[in-house]
Amino acid sequence: MPDLDSRVKQLDMLLREIAGILLDGHFDLLPAMSTRQAQLVAKLAASGLDRPGISAARIRTLESLAKRNERLLQAAIRGMHSATQRRAEVLSAHRSCQAYDREGRAVTIELHEPEIELRK
Image (cartoon, rainbow, N blue to C red):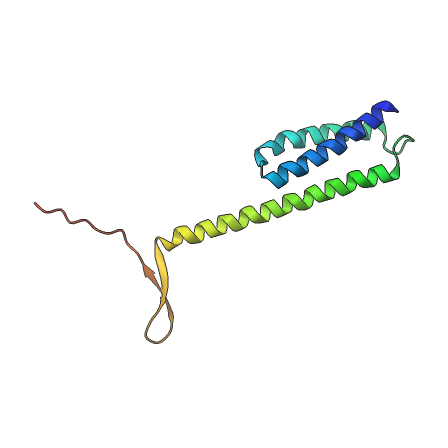
């Protein structure tokens, strides 16, 4: 089954390539990689993974690589979410700041753009 073995090797290499992309932060390449992965998986499914020619160990390796990529993608999403939150915090610091009044209660002080006085 050289065709089946070839497709398994291609999927293995692609999953490893996707891991590198996730680790390097080249997220713009993911849509194309996802399409290639879906095509390979569809071809493998049509070939019949349960047929002789592919070992259970090889299938476990593919599953392990796919699960690793899933964890990497989830970590990347969490990182982007954290960065988005931090950016919002930094931007809001330009509009207001937190302080305490004489009784020790937290208060928000709105910051305004400095007004420029035009003299004639």
